[in-house]
Image (tube, rainbow, N blue to C red; front, top):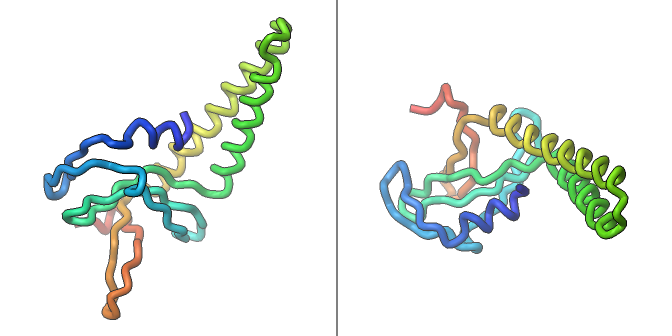
Length: 142
C-alpha cells in the first residue's frame, strides 16, 4: 500500500493527541510536506500535527530512493495491467512475483527510514518568530 492509499485511509479520521489528549479530525489540507535534511540525508517529511499542542505526527519520510521505488512499483503495476486478458499465465506469474518484490522493497525502505529516524520531529520558533521543524533523537527527548 503506497502513501496515497495510506493517507486515504486516515482522512477524516478522528484522532486523539497522545500528548495533550485533544481530539481532532485529519483532513486532506491537514497533511503537510516539509523538505528536510537530517544526518546528511535529504527527504520530504509528510506529516500532520495536533492543532492544540502542535505535536507533529509523521506520516512518511520520502527520500530519493523512496520516489525511485514508487516509480518502479508503478511500472510493475502497469505491466501487470497490460498483461491482463492475454491469458499468458507464465508471464502473469513472473509479473506478479516482480510486483511483490517491488512492493516489498518499498515496504522495507519505509521501515528502514523509520528506524533511522526513530526520534521525533518538532516545531521550533526562533527569536524572530520563524517556525522550523527539527529532528530530535530519542536520546535527546525528555
